Image (cartoon, rainbow over all chains, first blue to last red; front, side, top):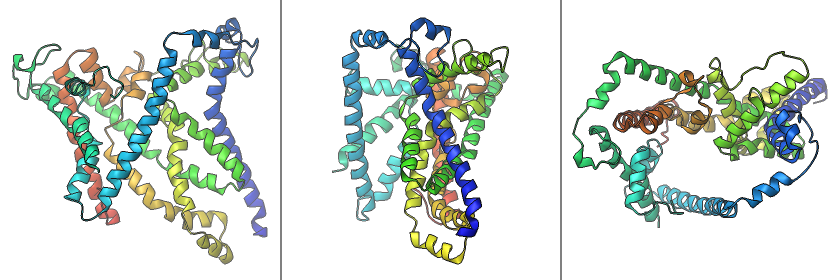
Length: 142
Length: 290
């Protein structure tokens, strides 16, 4: 190992630099938006805020929380995520286990049935019509 | 036990297929189906009948194929990312990088567009302000409403969003490789690159092939959200993929039967591609994926 030391060091440096650069690219947009929200509004629209906030204030956030319906919207987002993840996990594990057992009834057919459903969609309008027919119009469960 | 989920798949994926019948009637919004005149395959042939719609379809297909092909070309990127990440010895740096690069995957495309707007827009964006204030350029560059490099730009956004997430699977595959192989290779005197090429890459190759075949099957299913958000009159010619074209024709142009016909053909080709990819997998790897 010792005779490859120099190559290893060079590779490590390049590697870590590339990763830090890419991580910076991934995170910086969020940071930029955040410092714009807590900075002075005039400076923000004039485009003077680049890397650090100037004139820190939290009025923007207070305005957002005063919006009507934001509590309900947030609750719906959270509930949808939690329930959606749970149901997806349940469905995937049930179906995955069922497809692994060789004695399942017409296993190959049902497996293809489910996989092919991933690859086409019937379109927006039939989707809407189906939802209306089974009564899920304007409903959380949709 | 699994019956309710099968029923759910049936109701939500197969039952709306009844709506494919809209493609065979001269449907207008609000009318009942039996009041519309039956036109048979008129809308299917209308796609290739006159030169204008033929040109449209060819342009849209060119965009779709081009962007899907670029996505397939960029598919080794998560693999390289995963391999290089596992070469970093500091565990805390690795989890730090992994957490932060997976972050863009969790925001929806709408937020990605607003992020892109705040960075790239011509008068208010960070990049233009930064370049102007350091005097690198004298006139602002229009990054978003430019039709020159649209395919590459879309590829860039899509890579930014999905690289961290897609590499998770490869990282899991690398950690599953037997560590004794690495020790044996080190004893035999293999250099770092030789270890990567001879041990890590063959260990990842099955995972890579399955995901590659699935993305071939998704060749014309580019999705609509990303292209819908980044579309504007300047880059519309180069950005419109098949799903977006169906949306524009159907919802905006209110030409519902025509767009349903295009959608029907697209779904059929998708399923055909799936079986083609499965056949490829049987030939190359001697096992099928469905």
